[in-house]
Image (cartoon, rainbow, N blue to C red; front, top):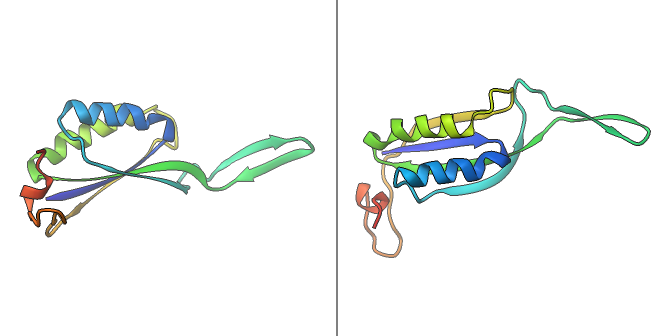
Length: 115
C-alpha cells in the first residue's frame, strides 16, 4: 500500500476530487494548510504600501491505496492540479505498512478497497 500526500492550490481541489472519483478513488482526507516553496510567498498591496505574505494557502490531500493504483492516481493528480505556474504544489508518496478499519477491524488492502 502507498500513501499519497498531495499539496495543491485550493482552487484545484474540486478538479482533483472529480478526476480521482472517475478512477473510483473516493476516500481521501483533505486538510487546509499553508506553506511556501520556491514561490517564496507573494507581495500584496494594501492601502499605504506593500506587504509580503510568506505562507500561501494550500490544500493537502491524503489518500491510501493499493500499489497498483498508485501511478494512475499520481498521473491524475498531476494533470488535474496543474496550472503551469509556480506554486502548483508537490506530491509525496510513502509506503504504508498496514491500515485498519476501526468499525470492522478489516486490515491491509481489505480496508482501503471500495465497498
